[in-house]
Length: 288
Image (tube, rainbow, N blue to C red; front, side):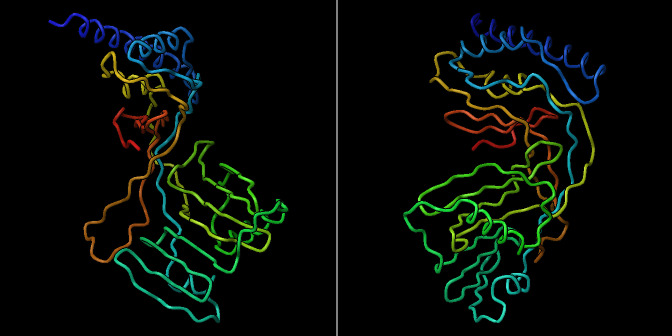
């Protein structure tokens, strides 16, 4: 028997049982948040450190017990894109295997799967000069308003001020938890919007709610089976998020899949990958 491997298995089992018991205790006493003991955090860091996992991120000491969500993407069909960007303007329409392209003299728009939009305007140029940030942001929001989206749950993810432009990334959230599959990215100048990528949820409805695992359990799931002596991995961020799964109809022929579900996740970002651990059942949902 490999006693070193057996020892690691027993340590991991002990940590998981200890965390699970604490988790159950605090879940019963508080309906909204789960608290994590500081000693448990240090035990996890020490255990993962032996596997060359360096935790450079703050491990959340409380988590929101989040429901799964039913969602639907905002749909962009040919008529809607025409009304927004090509009203009284000639354009060329090209069907594609997943959607369509519409192209005028300066503006081009690609729509994939009915909800994933890419926009470009050749007439708006980025000049390598200082910009009026307020004017650029006003142009960005004017563009968003034209899309007639439900923006009640939006928040600013990032804002970058460059030479001649402002890059704005907006996200969507539910109960202060980021919905990773919904985002607007815009590059705007003082003259208008150069390009934009839009994928936005039209509505979000709470569905079933289950107990949520703690972030330390997600860390153990992500890295617990890692062998000692492996290359050093630095964990940069641990956060709650939502992961999108499309609803699959019985008949796929010619149907756009705009509706689906969002499951709460622990998103673990390192210097190498971004791992999505399902916060209900500890499954790996994605690795980027």
